[in-house]
Every structure is written in C-alpha cells, then in structure tokens.
Length: 281
Image (cartoon, rainbow, N blue to C red; front, side, top):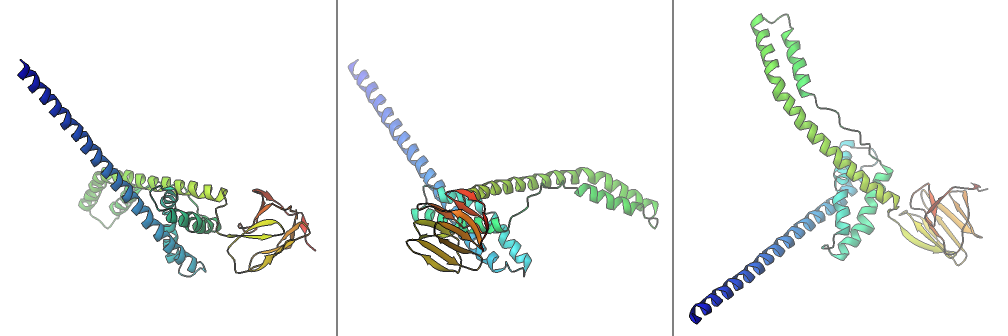
C-alpha cells in the first residue's frame, strides 16, 4: 500500500514539474514572439521615418512649381508616412535618440510643410465601371452598321457583364473608402500637431523674453533690454516693452513672456494668439 502511495506521489510530482516547465516554455515563446512583433513594428516605423525625410527633401526642392508630377508623388509618400512616424515618436521600444530626432526634427518639418501646403480630402466618388461598360456596349449595339446577330451578341454580353462589373464596383468602392479613412486619420494627426504648433524653429532670448523663431536665414540678436531680427519673411523688433513684427505693433510684452513666431503671419504670446494693435510708423 505504501509502495502505491509513493508511486502515485512521484507521478503527481512528475506531472507537476512537466506542467511548470511547459508553462515556463510557453511563456518564454510568447515573450519571444512579442519581442519579435515589437521589433518588426519598430523597424517598419524607422523605415517610414527615413523615407519621409527623403521625400521631404524631394518635395521641398520641387516646390518651385516645376516637375509637378514628381512633387506630387513625393508629397503623397510623405503624407502617408505621418501616422506611422507619429507612432515612432511615442514608441517606448525605440531608442531615445530616435524618438527625440523624430519629435524635434522630422515631424515638425513635415507638419509645417503641410500647414503651408494643405491637402483637400474630398469624399470618394462611387465607382461606376458597370455603367461605363454597359453604356459602351449599348452604343455599339445601336450602331446601324452592325447586323442583327452582332447586336444580339452585344446585348447578351451587356446583360451578363452587369453582375461581374457590379462586383468590381463594390471592390473599388471599398478600396477608395479605406483610402479616405486613412486620409482622415492622417489629417487628424496633422491637426493635432498644428494645434500644438509643433513647427521647426529655435529659441532666442532678448529683453528677458523668450522668442520661438522659425528656421530662417536671418540675422539679429538680443540684449538685456531688447531683441531684433531681420529675415527673408520675418522682421522682429522688441524694445521698451513693445513688440513689433513686420512693422505691426503687437502691444506690450513683459519679461518672462514667451513669444511664438514660428507660424509666419501669426503671433502667439504665452500660447494665446495676439492681433496687431496698429501699424508701426
């Protein structure tokens, strides 16, 4: 009797050990699969990010209006990378240097590009391949030069083709609607970055005020009591507590304020947009 109990105990212990090992092995395989999935996602986001930077350079170089088709292709590829690159900026598996580069350089450049070159996203039109085919066949069937036999064949083909081409219409409608949904998702991400004024630029100090400036080939600087800047599209003069931008008076500015001028034509003071008071004399 004692022998049977010992054997039963050994079997139970053996089965328990096998179960523990099996669960550990399953958990290990799951963690490996998860790691591979995260790595694959990260690799895809990195590739999209680098592609977006290349397309940004192409689109910017072609912005003069020449070779419009090449510019559109580059813009389209850049547009379709925004969602994935936005994910990369928040991906905890990515290197900190990657997230910083994406957040501080790549995304701001592209956000500014599409802010200055906005896209229209009209709802897709319904596909009508079946209607076009039917119209063409009926025109041929009504051709007086054709004999009755040919007309009968064309009519029969038109009737039999309706079902096939109707299915094609449904297929293309689904593709177009999915592309439209993706465009709306991209626009939502872009709108969020625009609302946060996520544009490229740099900080400059003058008169105790922080100025967020766009990337521009201008010159100037600040002192303890003033700030001046003269660029291609932006001129800034701050002295005696008054801010003037492109010869427009934007009123008083206090020490410790933050003035955001990265959106050309718009002035934000401490995150609130400010309108000009009067033209400078």
